[in-house]
Image (cartoon, rainbow, N blue to C red; front, side, top):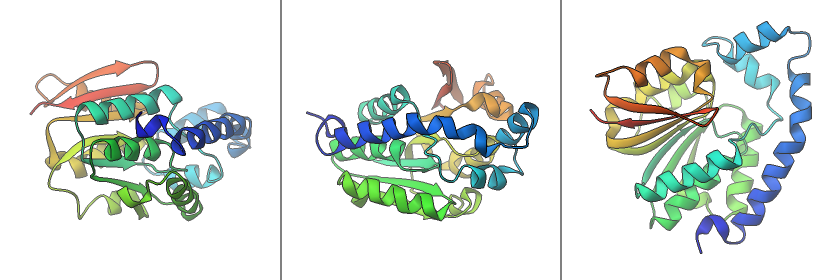
Length: 221
């Protein structure tokens, strides 16, 4: 039995996904007074992300159940010991990553979140799952928190924060990615520059769209 499908993690994830599903009805309120075009532009902005995520500070904003399982499988298959996550939110994806680290025999997940109330929730969930000891949560803007004190090598990266910053975050991590390291970009279509970078011929990555909302890339250079 894997950590992911054992108690208390299995029941915890079921509860958190159910709560996240129920919270979807609250998303439109976060964009009250904005047109659809304005909201979409903000989602991919490199400058308005703090306002955007402050509006959504009470929403879980998780990866899908399928993406969570994919993260766990990728981390297990690659025997990942060093994982970096951009965008902790309530810690649902972090639970999947930390469960894989536990089943791999140990390691560390570095994750970053600028909203203090979300960090409190994420810590509670990770503690409830018995996985907090494997996770370092860095509070603040990821452009700063992921700019220093990184592992010598990184096995897996999850990009699931402000979509417009995916390229900037990769700039900070790229030199530490081992050959064969995997990157999963959630809703990466909202950052065209990032997609162009990881899909470019000779750019050092092999990259494919995976499902409707995920880009899966491997460092080959």
